[in-house]
Image (cartoon, rainbow, N blue to C red; front, side):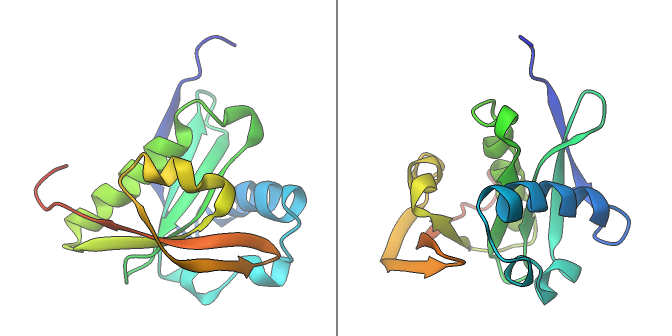
Length: 148
């Protein structure tokens, strides 16, 4: 496949839950061995969720933004990594945060993904910590208002 085109759309947690869960279960639970009881939380019902879809409408990635400005649950299916899906999801979540008037966003980055987030303006804060058995670091990005 030479052309890896995809679209990003806002998802509704109730209507699109099966698609969102499928991507997260594939990446976090099956691939990274995150315990299921740690993957699902009360934030899902209140967060803005985005879905990346391939040309046939199949989900290839997801991410969420909580009302307090925490970006999380960023997941891209393995065949789609390195194609711009993660960057597009992150930029769309940051754009949504700007629209909501948030001055900054924060996230808990897997240590292996720090470089990815740095390229998007995030800085590392604090010490490394374990979350679901995976090393993480807190990262923060100030948002410039009016720059969409």
